[in-house]
Amino acid sequence: MTVRVQGGPGSGKGTQCGRIVEKYGFTHLSSGDLLREEVGSGTEMAAKIKAIMDRGELVPLVCIFCNCYRTSTCKAMQNAI
Image (cartoon, rainbow, N blue to C red; front, side):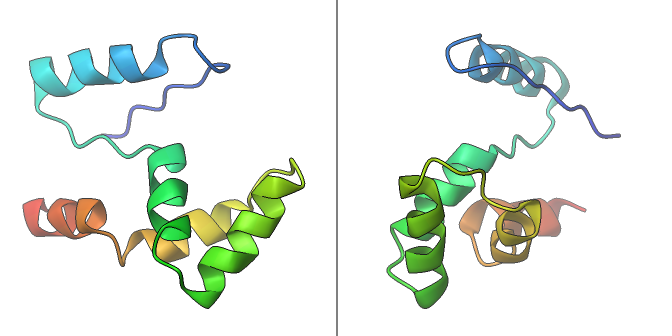
C-alpha cells in the first residue's frame, strides 16, 4: 500500500506522516529529506541537484528516486520488503 501526502511548506505533512508511521508502521520517504541527503553527499549528482534547487526549480522525480536507492532510508525499506 502506498499513501501519498501532499501540501505546501509548513502544512503539517511531516507531522501527519509521523502519525501514520507510528500508528501503522509504514516507512516514510520524504523527497526533501532524500534531496538534502544527496546534496550533502558531495557527488556529481549532488552538485547538479543543488544547482536546480538554487535556481528555485523543481528537481525531476527521476533524480529523487534514482538516487533514493543509495540512501540508508531506502536500503532499510528494501530490507523490510
